[in-house]
Length: 287
Image (cartoon, rainbow, N blue to C red; front, side, top):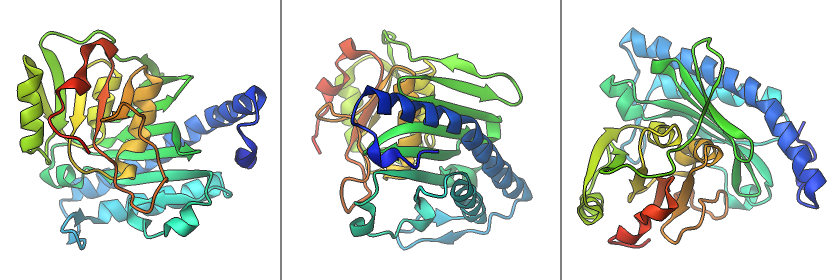
């Protein structure tokens, strides 16, 4: 499955074949995300997260490492020919990565600060990247027992517990006042300036990739991200939003792309649904 990804792009037939292969991956990857979520919750409930700190002072817990190991090993078994880039094993030089046409991009525990704050707003993010684009995204929300999945061009859904998947879609006409979701842990003056220019709005602070998912299911109109993120923070959720009819774009209106450069940092970006709302017009800075 997907071993022929390097040949995709020659025509419609190959695109359709790739999409069929991706659809076959949706269920097994969802199960991997659920199993990783279970491993995280076991540690979450133990009250002993085993915290250490990385060189950038960001926290790392035993839950991050347990989920990383489970996901990477499971993906290697599922698709042995496809490399995996995870936040916890990101020291792969671009000289190597630049030769990848297809790879998995993983954040085993997105929202470690939320995990430690015990507010439940953390996710498991697994994305399949093909030719710099997120073509499959699975975002697990362990504390809610929910998983969001998306395949652009096919559709997005939410799975709650053992219930059947429910299709989700963005709200294509922005509410009044505009419903904004923003980072719980990383708010700054730039976002405040943007919100002042935006006008009437309600702001809900939310952690992790859950912000994307709220937009994807119509619970918010826009998520302005005017701060640093890494590629593993956004890829899976971008696929969900795009599959649900929304947009994830840089300040110049172009979709976020992956594995295009040495740095794994994203540019600033916006997540939204309503093209007519002009959300990018209010940006006070450029990057």
